[in-house]
Length: 166
Image (cartoon, rainbow, N blue to C red):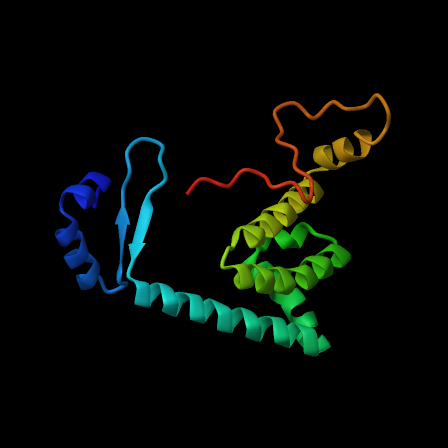
């Protein structure tokens, strides 16, 4: 459904929303504007409760059981394939940071800090995966040496890289 259709035919939009199995409809916007998703309040509440429960359970397991922490570190590459490029200590640090950030973001109802953490660690993995970027990271800390490899997008941890398309 387009944004214009939503504005001009709101009752039809509500009918489509109610008929949708996901109780959500995508609202397309013109140009480069980001699309919107219209969700009914009950579905939004349900999704939030599922996320809260999952996050709390995941964080509690990681906090209370060293074996679970070790297992999560082992399976991280299944969820985040780029973690294969992180050294073990960095992978453990990412695994340790993730549940706390998930809980804090959930308490605010805002996932932005989670995506920032993930993109930051992904950027770190990009540096470990590319010898030229690793050399540049080292060189940039030497006075007078600040030239990045030509054509490369350099990212360091804690700096949020641009989001991938899609």
